[in-house]
Image 1: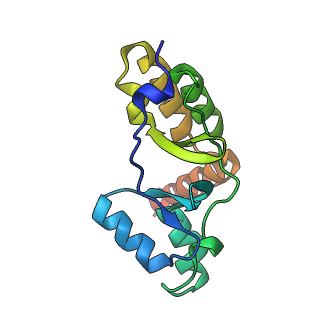
Image 2: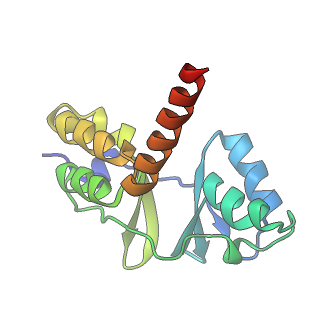
Length: 160
């Protein structure tokens, strides 16, 4: 059985709460990533994603100099180095997350992605199921309403 310590990325690039949105976006572009852990010292205090930058930053008309602290997700799900890969896949599926920071006594020691879990043969089924659940829309009412609107527009066009 694999544990997260066996599959996690250990040298994690991070930002701190004093960094700004522009610096984070630039770092994401350089690293070709969509999420970066936010730390104070070694303590994990949040995650900042490309989605956070858009929804909490630019969509709210905040400038690129706006602090990461005001944009990041603070209530994050974490794993531990001793957690099994299967348990991590289940945790990621339940919380619909693609990346799981790994902490030991609150300190960031690594990160795993759903792809990291999928490469392990004994966890590929769990990782596949996790990815399926993660990819499901979290707001089915919104999705149903959107689908209904699309169907109505198609019917209207067909009538003409």
